[in-house]
Amino acid sequence: MSLFDAVSHSFSTIAIGGFSTHDASIAYFDSPLIESIAVLFMIIAGINFALHFFALQKRQLKHYLQDPEFQFYTFILSSVSLITVTVLAANGTYDSLLEALRRGVFQVVSFATTTGYATAEFNSWPLFLPYVLLYAAIIGACAGSTGGGMKVIRILLIFKQGFREVQRLIHPRAIIPIKLGKKVMQDRIVESVWGFFAVYVMAFMAMLLALLAAGLDIITAFSAVGACINNLGPGLSDVAENYGALPGAAKWILCLAMLLGRLEVFTLLVLFTPMFWKR
Image (cartoon, rainbow, N blue to C red; front, top):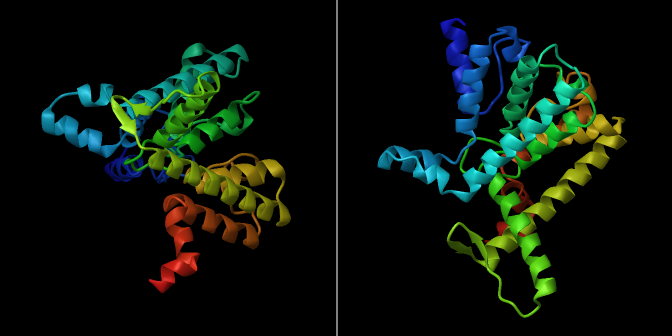
């Protein structure tokens, strides 16, 4: 890798931009070492930067290990990687287990952190794997990172809230707080997470219907909205490589999706409320 390529990809990796100086992305270099370095720094960039700050300040790694979001983040990366590599190996997609491990782990980390690098034709992977990658991107990276998606902390709180409701069915009078580590989360925070989730889903469905009306097939439309609103980049079917073939109306819709995703929905939508302009 030349100095220019190295600098360009280092910026793109830490910023989770996913842009490459070559059309083939990271696959252009065909280097396991370069891919391993990219995987490491994509994972680092997907972690809350406040954790990096505290770890450097205290010179201790325990801040990572004690953080519930980091624990869930690593669990997602590990479990999705295991599923992907297992399916690729079982279906004989690649000649060896090592090759399946190399391609599978890279694409999982790239999608889960919403970086968008590619070293394989993931669109043609067997069974449900392309959709697993897309759903990993919808979860996204950690809050306070450069990544996109709904953010790991929100998904974790939604799971905890769901589990609490199951417990309340069994023990209706019990007071069951939601905790992240030792910290009790206020109900207002949980409500804001559900509010974000509701608005996110409504925006997703509205743009999906708009793309279908623009003439896109369901797989292309769904993956395009998922890729853009989560700031991922590559999608499935017709948008696996680029968006050049899409009609102009679809591109305008996806521009809105990218803005909504980068500003985390509420920040942009608040501009369209009369109350904001009356203040």
